[in-house]
Image (cartoon, rainbow, N blue to C red; front, top):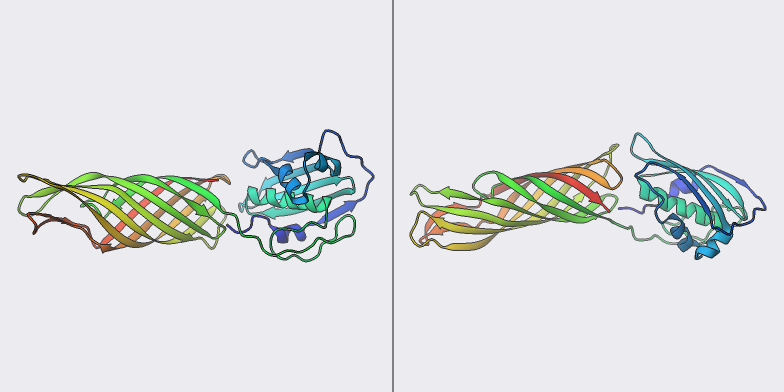
Length: 314
């Protein structure tokens, strides 16, 4: 994910500054956070303290009050109206973020600049901004973007690895940045039986189909996030002979390269519905035989899968 602090919005935000001789409160800063239930101010004051290099007591000596009204717009972005009061003065700011976490990071930055306009601001190089005391903050280089970690139970269908289309179930996990995600998936399918023209057969079991993929989602349309994906899969297959004397069991690996597409629907900042589909080309096709030369089954040249699940983004 790209840097969560919406710096351009922070710097172009409207501002009203009024100096006042206000004394700090011994009980610490007052935080009034009016926001939807899915966007609590978790860790906000601690983040402000980190940015300005102050502990709880030092922060309480300089910051008096933060008031925030936070709302989510119909296009999915978030908007905050801030009222900040420090011992040096008071001011208001308005800005937007793509999600709640971006809004919290932006709020922490704005409050930190109100306390100490000379701090080194994390993120891209910034134009100068005048603070309550008339000083400008220092500029710094870009900071590496922080990913959001994701986990998603999966249920769907697979074809081409086993003889028939079958139920698939498993789990996906990975990391997502602003426009790119990398994830691994593991799925399994119930065993299937197949018979050749001679009446000999086998039971094929897909023990584990593990896949790694990278997805790019260049745009987000409201709450919808489309993506294109590329990846590779490694399937662990086990076969057992049927309707023959002295059946044997063998394991083998199938390998495929695949491309696909996905759609995500945002329910909350941390909760999504995601569906995906992919078509693969087998680069290693195990051949299951009886007697060393009688084929019972072989993995198909083309494979495919569709799956969906509830995704948690942490």
